[in-house]
Structure formats: structure tokens, C-alpha cells
Amino acid sequence: MAITTTSTTSTTPPLKKSSFELGGPYGDWRDDLHNQGYAIIKNAIDQERAHSYQRKALDWLRSFNTALNLDDPSTWTKDNLPVQSKVNTFNGYSVTHEKFMWDARMEPKILEAFAKIWGTDELLVSFDALNITLPNREDKPAAKPWPHVDQSPLRRGLHCIQGIINLSHAGPEDGSLMVFPRSNMATERFFDTETDPSTWEEKDIRRFSEEEIQWFEDHGMKPSKVLAEPGDLIVWDSRTVHWGGEPTVNSNTIRTVIYASYAPFELATEESLKRKKEAFESYRATTHWPHENIVIRDGVVHLPDGRVDPRNRYVPLELPEHTDRLLQLAGVKSYR
Image (spheres, rainbow, N blue to C red):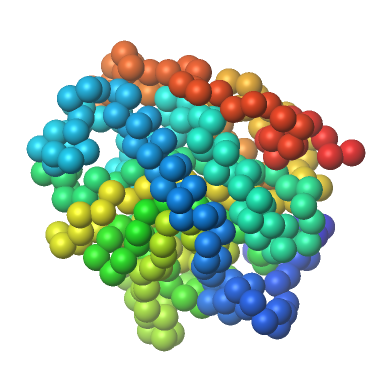
């Protein structure tokens, strides 16, 4: 699992290469993860428990304004909702450290899936966002596709596996993850042949323009919506081109998902663990990455006009019990 830094030519920036590979064949969903760039682990959480997590998430949403009625779309307005990103995610208000978020992250089969990928149960987890997408809101246009990868062109190989803990039905008309199957094996070739290395950045996100995404389509890759049920776990390689797909006008499903990525504890540096501890103790979110690229999100939520949201929370509504296992996953307590 070691990551080494090499320089290929005098004009190419130093590359961080991962020695970890999903080889296979395994005869299970890991073959899809390797070959298609994503996979679905069915029933990673019992559906009844998944629905209970969704209820907790929607209770959290309603806690900001009693005028919000999830049975009445006319109340689904910015004034009645906490501030979220353009892509329907929440990572402020200390939500990433709410008890229901941690409980879902610590579900046994979720942990087992990532342990199966990495070959170890000594894992770290990301402090990632909650997505609640209210379909067909009148005051907010649907976000346009924003195809991207969450891995810098300066990284090569498999560095990060992202995850979605699915808490709602994701059918053809509903909001769900959009992917370009097999793009995980093509993005490095795209960067090497279609881009200027001098433009590559260390930031672990790279968006693609319409003209650039055409390259993937010209090479036989087409976008596909991931269909899933409550309790399913969706995993994907960070090199897979993807984005959060919006519901169509025919959907009445409130998409509810928790983003959670896991990686081996041994891959984290002391600096990364220090930053994770800082984020954990201040109840703040980080990125999709659990072991590296630990960018701590601002703990203060601002309204669109720039003012601090008076509803801002610096502590979760319900704190989880800080068990040894939770603290190890958070990177606060060592496995050794």
C-alpha cells in the first residue's frame, strides 16, 4: 500500500504513485469496482435501519425551522432550510459528527466492505457530508451536470475509494450518483494525452468541460445513473468520472445519503492525523479523503448575503458515544 514519489520526465511534475491495486478476479462486487470503476454492495444495512437513519436525517433538517413540512413542497424554500451547497450537500452545522452519521459509518457491513477492499480492518473514515435533495424545488433550479474526479492528475493509481451510504430509493427518475463506467482506467491517459502537465494541480478535484468530457464519450464511455435501494452501499474509485445527478420532474423521492470513505490507518501521515484530530474535536467536516488531503471545512456557515447564519451550530444536536472503535476510525486513537 506504500505510495512513492517518482519523476517520469524533466517536463512532468513529480507524480505520487500508489502501489495498491485491485487485481482480481474476486468473483464478487470488487470485480465491478476494478473493471467499471464503481460497485453496489446490496443490503449493507438492513432496510429498516436505513429508513431509521433517513428519519434521523430528516428530523435534523426539520430542526432548523418548524415551518418546514416535508409533506408540503411549498415550504421547501431557502428561508426554511439550512444552507447547503449547490449540489444539495450539508457539511456545516456540525452535522458530520451527529450521532446518526457516526452510527451509519460504523455499521458492521459498511466497515466489512471497505476492509475487504483494502485488506485490513484498521481503517480511517472521512468526516464527509450529508446529502438531502428535495426534488423539484421551485426556488432552486436543478444543478447542471458537473463531471469530475476527486483525484489530482499528479496522483497515479488507486489512492482513494469513495462511498455513499444510501438511505432512500434511487430509481431512474430519482437523484443518484452519475458515473462514467470504466473511466477509472482512462483518466490518466486523458491527462497525459489531452492536457498540459504544467496546468496540473495538487488539489484532489478536477472538473471536465463539455469539450473534455466528449473525449470519454468518443472512447466508448457513456454516463450512467447508479440505481440503488435503502441500505445499499455504493463505492467508486476516485479516478472514476462522476457527479451527483439531480431528480427529474417525475420524481417525488427525497434523496438522502451519507458520504463516507475509508482507507487504511497506515497510509496516514502524522500531519494528516493531527488535522483529523483538530477537525474531530471542533466537530468540522473534511473532504472525501479519509487519510490524506485533510482539508478542514469552515465551522461557520454563512448566509448568501455573507452574514453568519444565526442558526449556526458548533456542536451536534446529539453526540455519539466516543468508543475506542469510533476514535480509531476518526484517527484520534491509534490501532497500535
